[in-house]
Image (tube, rainbow, N blue to C red; front, side, top):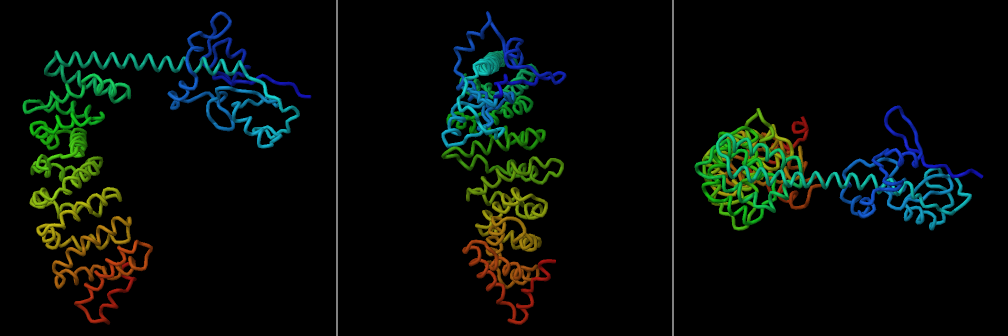
Length: 443
């Protein structure tokens, strides 16, 4: 009968293989001994808690249960020499299996043996990692408080450098964000923003705030007109990183209940967002810019201002170059703007609107098709004699037939049918049928 073999551990450096007892004795894999045993501190820590809080770190393979692929807390060994978490192997055996799950060898002995050596090694390894994490977290906590205290004393370039350091710490350590929120860091940083704040200071403050969880009070504080005005200035004049950060922070502030849309109705903000969206040098600004514009355009009182700066032709021009996510945002904005009369007129009067929208039907997502149809319907209904023929010549009739015959939702099909009927009014039946041929559309 084969004898039980100690579990082997392969360690880095020459591929040396040691048994667990040797690994523990020599401190391999983070093991360590005190007076022939393990650290008393390790024994006091709760293994389950440590495993849960260290779930993102890479765990040595020998600690992983082959059944659950999770770290073992109560390892036991079968007669085949394979080790498993006790609860997992007991469940395997209770189902009537008489084999080893890993090797599929038949079990000549169904007894299980607690693997105390491996269990102690797991405890020691996790306790050391846990204590190191805790110490690092405490160090970060103290570092954040130190920087905040220093920021209250320094000005000018020294303040900028301190903010850069704080941004680095907050961006690197999750615990630093909590320290900021719990110790008045958000309130203090907000106080640094105002009409006399330099863009150098403001851009660093915004870069930190945009990565923090802001409560209602903090958001209300930041929605003061002077602070919003500073963000708008930096959005227009700052680096691409600053532009994106200001855009994201303003959007976060707009999500506050009872936010006053007048705060984001300034032409300077709207122009800055359009420039950000169209800037081909930095594609990372397109999505944030469109996302904020969509949120702003959802407020009817601001739509006229957006239309007045020529947003509609500018957005129509960029449609062909956008990915699906950004395309849905841009079409949502145009759909919002098309809900008011001046918006529909601007859409109708721009020669690229209809051709660009027709091309999008059935080419990207169902949402894009739905939004494009909504906009085309608004335009064609506004002036069917002028717009419907242009749309048909652009291939709209054939595209509408594709929508009707597709697996789209019923409401979309119904709208397509109504638009198709509207388009047919300017043609004889024979001519309109020829316009509905799919060959040209597919090409």
